[in-house]
Length: 92
Image (cartoon, rainbow, N blue to C red; front, side):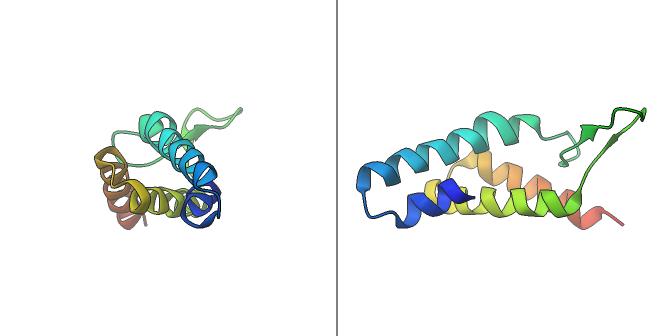
């Protein structure tokens, strides 16, 4: 989120370009890659047999993905956002 925000407002064009690329790399190469088939993001707890998720943290992640998509228009980021929103909406 912070990289995308810096890419949008930093006064130095070189820093804006660098932050845009860092935000896009993180969104595509890390967060979209780690997204589960159902659209969520999970982690394994040391003493549990199942993986869990923190929807509040996913919301913050989604805010960063949206900011990155607004800068780049990247289709992979857009798909991750859509899948994540569908997953969050389906949570009870």
